[in-house]
Image 1 (cartoon, rainbow over the protein chains, first blue to last red):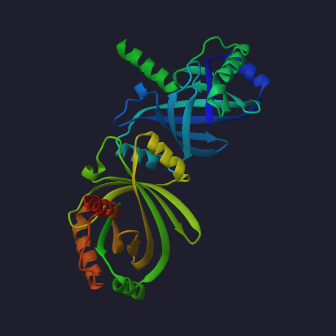
Image 2 (image 1 turned 60 degrees about the vertical axis):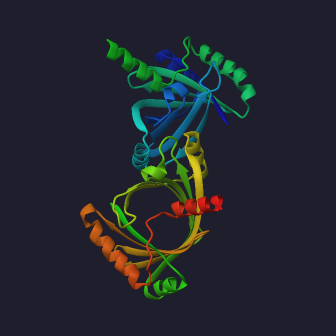
Length: 183
Length: 183
């Protein structure tokens, strides 16, 4: 299954339009810790390994996720393998023993909305970066990706989005950190 | 916590002595898949990464386990980090995407016995290798390891064990495979 995601910069007006038009699903708090591979430069191979801790409605969940390189030039589409984990701290200990190094933890508040069958919108307020909107759909076939991306981009533009972003929050935060270091 | 283990070669007589003297806990079936690190030679660093599938009394459990190098010259004592996993196949997919390679799957039937508080004996019948007995205890302090190892070795000798083995089943199976290849 391929996850097709288009992300754009948002502001409070875009957030309000989504809240008025679509069905609210839930509000989540994410704490995502990203790891660097012991012998592969993920920033060059465009991969990612993440432990996500997700809290919502008093629940606590954790996942280990591998993200493969992007496979489409206009979107964030990539292959993803995700498994639930029971003990994120111990998992982190195993990763560290294997030589994986913690890069950064990204924290955000996410609101999820149902758009139509198979399409969801998320509103993200990311610590240190600000507001973003993501629209997501799933497809089984790589051939359908470009057409689906175009549809999703148009839906975001209708909501008032004018600037898109393919980079991950991790990449944006690392860039920001780099700028600070240079200053 | 440090797991102190002493392993020896066994035969049906040793197995019978254990079955007569100690309290039977349960019989398990293990399917252990070992992985090679993408850029570290575990056979040289004396580490191991394993996915274990364990079946007993109709249950199914899976674990991801990292084993650090042995820290004692007379026993199999090593540091171990283990987490339960829900979906071993997807976990294996993530490991493979990260460059870990499957080395071998070791299958065995294990019978567990309770000896006394904190001490257990396991009788292993390993596919392709034969019968082994392991005695195991836990300690919090590295200083107590040598004394504990001596006690465990004596207990095995009393049961008729004359030959000890520090190598893992994986190492023994790989050696056997190597011998066959040379023949």
